[in-house]
Amino acid sequence: MEPTPAEVRRWIAEGLDCDTLEVDGDGRHFDALVVAAAFEGKSRVQRHQLVYAALGERMRAVVHALSIKALTPAEWQALQK
Image (cartoon, rainbow, N blue to C red):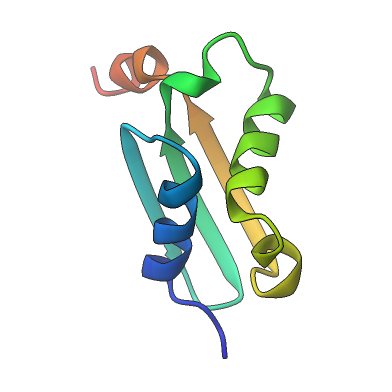
């Protein structure tokens, strides 16, 4: 059974404290916007690793493709202007 965007969103939220979290997708391919203070001082790769860690084994078992936009709250706020 393919996961829904709501399930992927919940799984990320369970493992990572997010200020903003949006997930869209079709059950196999997902796009995630993740805004979290935990990303402060982290490289893009490190930010993605935090999201993958939140998904755990689900990333390999049920989520086949995930495009991540990982931002700090300040970066997200700057984009809103």
